Length: 74
Image (cartoon, rainbow, N blue to C red; front, side, top):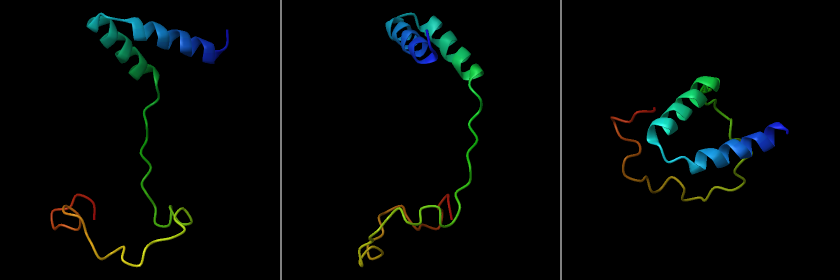
């Protein structure tokens, strides 16, 4: 049995679980087994070439909540 078949089998078993304590234990085991995710900071120009067209009036309307003084991200 390869790893993909094993994953599907485990997922099917987890889908059938009804006990919340067992589900919490499985979730904890999986979190401990997975390596921590490291967030890479965004870099200027990362999306360059992703968008091929931006409308001329793109900057005319700024939705509420954007560009506020108390904004989280500058």
